[in-house]
Amino acid sequence: MYSKDTQIVETTTGKWLRFPNHFKKSTCLVELSNQISLNIDSKSGSVYVHKKDHNQVYQPVGELFISATQTQIQCTAVQGWMQERVGHVKLGPIQAGDSENVKELEKEESA
Image 1 (spheres, rainbow, N blue to C red):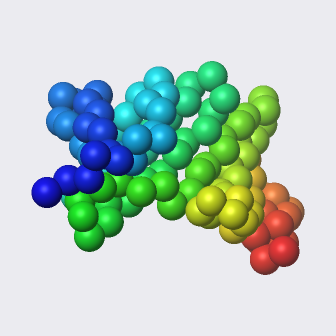
Image 2: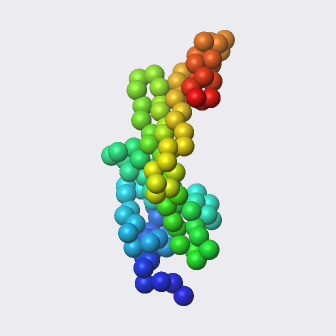
């Protein structure tokens, strides 16, 4: 039996998933597998990640913030409610044999 503290929400494919009552659907809700859903906000570039718990309710586990410049895409991951930053990745154009860009990316990833 489901708690009255949950709601069902429709995904873009027409499937219904169960979320806590405080869940707010953004621009696009997508289920990636039986365990993960992405709630995408096209205005802010945020992607809210939810994982199905033992009660079959999708609980928030983190957020991805995606932005782009003319030459790079940046993705920052924030884990859980405590907003702990778990990673920041810059993706840019890398030409074959462009070892300087590769070294810069490796340095940023190891930081």
